[in-house]
Amino acid sequence: MTGWNCVQTSKKTRKQTQGDRHKETDTRKQTQGNRHKETDTRKQTQGDRHKETDTRRQTQGNRHKETDTRKQTQGDRHKETDTRRQTQLVLVASQ
Image (cartoon, rainbow, N blue to C red; front, side, top):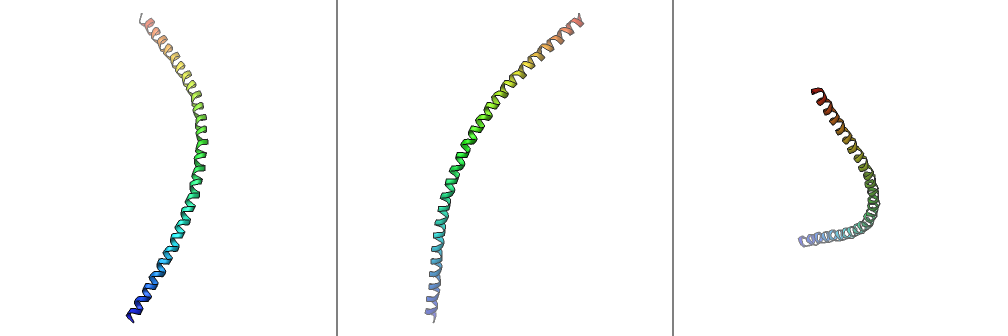
């Protein structure tokens, strides 16, 4: 009876290995699903390319902002002339 019980356990383990084989085919289906996901990521990279063109438009907007900062520096130059005028007024007061 002990030998017959051993045969039953070996059959159970064989069924478990067959179950693992079916799980392997399931993982193969998952890898195919990942392949479709890879094509989706390629579409996302194309979307990033369009975003790059959007960032180029933003850099053009920054170029216009740079011209605005140049106007601000010109405004600072006028402020420098204002401080020079103040120093002249102080010199006149000291004289």
